[in-house]
Image 1 (cartoon, rainbow, N blue to C red):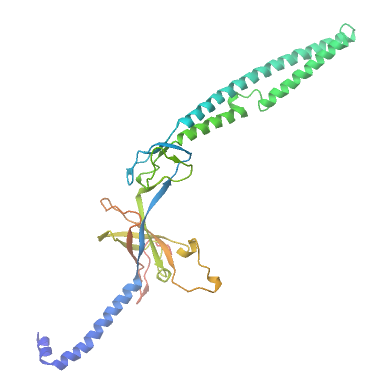
Image 2: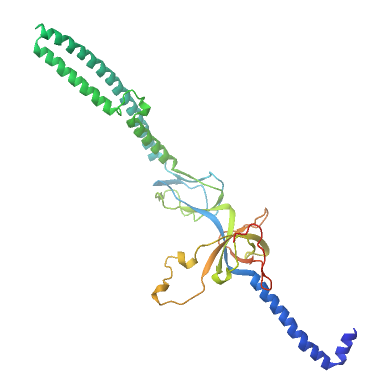
Length: 342
């Protein structure tokens, strides 16, 4: 109180004190701001990202049912789209019938092979017997020649049947190449039929639903998108000059524009190996000599710590991130947190 009274009574002392205190306060504030800006790196060029997949049919066909609507939440395995299955059922019936036919053909060929072997054995015995009789002029040479010709034909028949049975007539029909081929055709037809029903690969929300019954969809062409539930992260695009002391594992504070009163904590999960311009459709060609140097931005992936009851973070929401690098400009870089990857 006495000091305040003296200051109020002595304008000269008051001016002297202000001349000393005000610059000192400004210096302290400047040092604090400088040290804070050196330790914390922030950017508002950041967005929430979610896993998403384009839902595309694997067959071409006419749509008969679309049981989901725009922005509808779905569960894993829930029906998303039904393509007319009748053409594929017919193809499956044909393949199944062909499989049965091939099986019967193999069995018939195996029976023919056994019969041909028995016939060849009989003819061989007859040739041996008639050869001895021909030496005694009991059997004519023409009769013996007919038997030899029949034996040759029987052996050729055996070779032909054996070749059609994959060289081993003793194998069961299920091991024969023709049966395996017919079985693969049947399985392929069954697989095509299963593709007529599109189901959700994971829980999430369907969007870009612009398909209706009667439309014809094409194999490989996306019909709508699915934004998966659960995993959310932030992709922050820092200036390259800001990443001098940013490392994997450092703590991050995240604010989302939609929820300005809330904060999320996160961790630097990874830093891209190149700037955004490197992976663009038309990357910069600085070797031409006609260029202007600009500060590049490098994507940094930030894993979020989400808790039950947190507001829903939707893909594409704008965010602001603040990375704590633990750097103190007065004492140098502090020791890293456990888990830092330097």
